[in-house]
Length: 105
Image: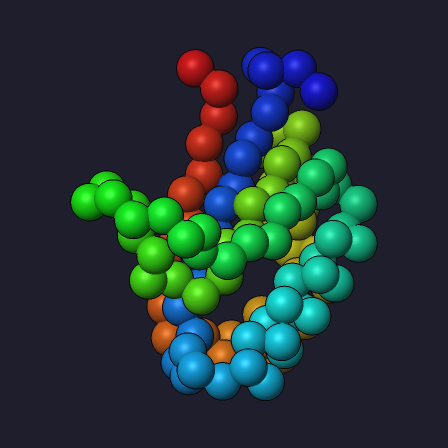
């Protein structure tokens, strides 16, 4: 993977029921299934770290960091049947999603 082609897709999820461990586990299981998508080179599933500074937002439930070789690979990921099924099955669990896409400078 070269810096010129790397595409980073970082998704933050806020659950409708943030205290529900069942909903959290359903979302985590759904996200792990996305790891099977062929254009995805690397992923990281995370929860808010125990850090406290004015610039840190810890209000989200789960973050999903994805690395692709290119924007085109990320676009294929968006339309992959595995991704479409994830959205269909898991979207009732969240109240908010924020996405940050970035490329190297």
